[in-house]
Length: 119
Image 1: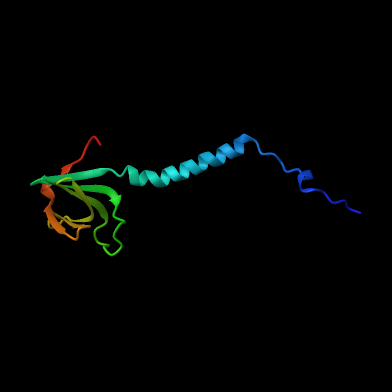
Image 2: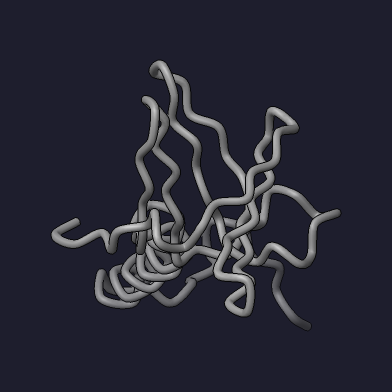
């Protein structure tokens, strides 16, 4: 006959600190990799005119699903306010087309943009 054991009589294998440490480091690495793309999106070009700064980023434009032909993220900064947007370049015409979250659009000559360095 088998004898019944109490719940506190069951012996589970004890895990050392190392497996838990490995899982914790792996979790931190995954979260860091996913978060780093948002935090460290690098600006590549900026244009200034009349108190407005338009900045173009390497980051993909993801906040507007309905706009598919403006692939990169852009920002419009004016009077301390920043508006997110999307940008696409038409090299044949020498212009960049923008759409911003305040529902404004802009077409800016590529000659107005300077490369952003040292960021």
